[in-house]
Image 1 (cartoon, rainbow, N blue to C red):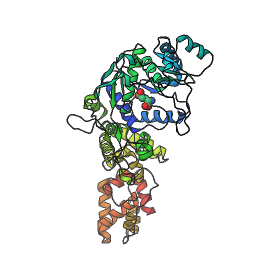
Image 2 (cartoon, helix red, strand yellow; image 1 turned 30 degrees about the horizontal axis):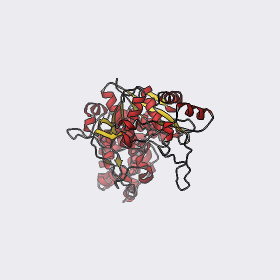
Image 3 (cartoon, rainbow, N blue to C red; image 1 turned 90 degrees about the horizontal axis):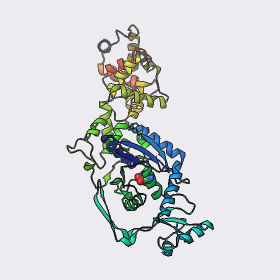
Image 4 (cartoon, rainbow, N blue to C red; image 1 turned 60 degrees about the vertical axis):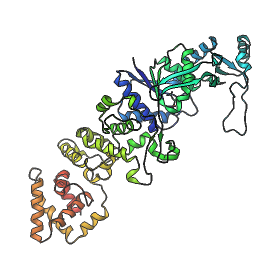
Length: 482
Ligand code: GLU
């Protein structure tokens, strides 16, 4: 059974690189009919926070790729302790009583050099136990079987054959002097406990894998298959980081700025992976059909964006991909996502319930060809969903032209004899052109002024369509207000 895990440490927001790791794990597991575990690596009590856990979970929920099990490392201490005990008993680990050296020039709290005190490896079991019982603090270390001269090897799913001489691996710590497990111990013990078959994670962990293979062997567990994913770089070629590159690095930014979960999944899947036929737009089902680990490149992927440009706050490709999804997903689903944003902005309109629902769907369907994010519906499309919207400068000029305002008032008066059945695009056009002919003005004057009064904008979908999208009641009100 294929079982994968995604193991974020809840010490901050979820990085889009982490989200991509999750997506690749998910796709791989689902293709194999396997299971996905969300393993929250919260053993670092000082740095782990509830807010970070919440943000990670809500970010992952936004992607709409459900996982099967959730596992908190903080709740698995018993397993970690048992694992440590077992390694000590079998001699795979030893107690290192070397007092931590405090180096005043170091920013790290303590420097505990590996093998600075090789004698510790050779302490007799009896002495080791006696000193521990006497309360002397110690770090538990893995006894790397260095004497074997072995070359450690594994076949990485992405980077191919990897090897390292065992003599280059230090006796890494398994437990700190307060008894708490290190990442290496907790991670491997939990992977055993969770029966993980494939570990797919960032390339920054590749060197850890040699240690982990030794640990898995010492725990009598067949090491999982490993795959390491290349890094994500920013436009400046450095590792993508929030400190350097800002909010564009955080998964929840995309949610808050109106991405569709599967739009983002599509974009992130293209960072380092490509389909054989170079296709770029995928529904989730298509991704499941097409994705393959062998299509992941070894080179780092670059995320481009321009923080100073509102239109390109994210990678232009991300925005384009999301726009393609906006155009093609089921319109009812799209309306549902837009509703969530309307609710969050207090812009939800009771007119959209019951009969008004069809009008909302039609509006969404018309607008989606022009927008790239859900936020666009709220910001650029505010007038279609709410009576509160701004009037752009250019639109105001159209209202100020000639007798435009008086003509709109007259138009409103004429529409009062209409009802929802007679109020259709043909009749609106007839009425507008009729009024223009009567008053000897160009129809464009009334059309442009109407668009400005109804939407606050100087460009947009067909003006006659806008009348119908808004409905008779709103049209009369806005024409009169203008
Ligand atoms: N908590 C580790 C991290 O966030 C997990 C690495 C792993 O997948 O083993 O880097």
